[in-house]
Image 1 (cartoon, helix red, strand yellow):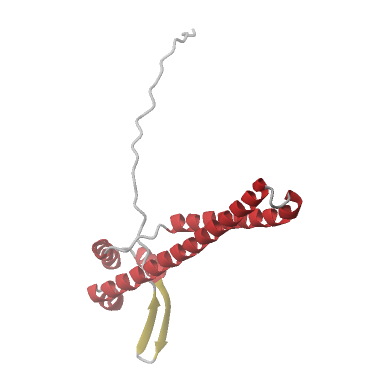
Image 2: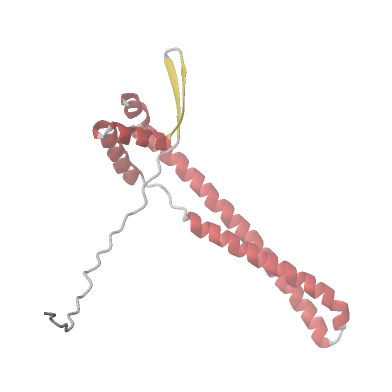
Length: 174
């Protein structure tokens, strides 16, 4: 427990972890935006092509029988791109990529240190299992593999008043 407090839950280590996590999250957000931009470009291209085919059809330059298979193909492509766009937008909103705030993480680390210092044996074991992935011992050396502990989601309390009571007439039974 002391070694974890000394080597894992330190300000220097914490700063490095926050930096790494933020870089990774920035990379994911950038990747999603690049995919989305590519899909939007594809949708725009399909829309332009369909517009040209519709113009040719309206002016009578080409007959519907000649254009129908091509229009169907482009409409199918357009639907696929729209579905992919919705999928990526949902992934982006599900991830809600937020950069880790060093101050928030520092407060959280302080709370974790309290758990290690004052928690019951069961609480300390559960806490360590939540982020320690592997411990390899070789002679007098131990290598600890861990991940950044998950920040708890914000807890909101909702106060609900007591339901009103309704008094209704009743009979006394004798």
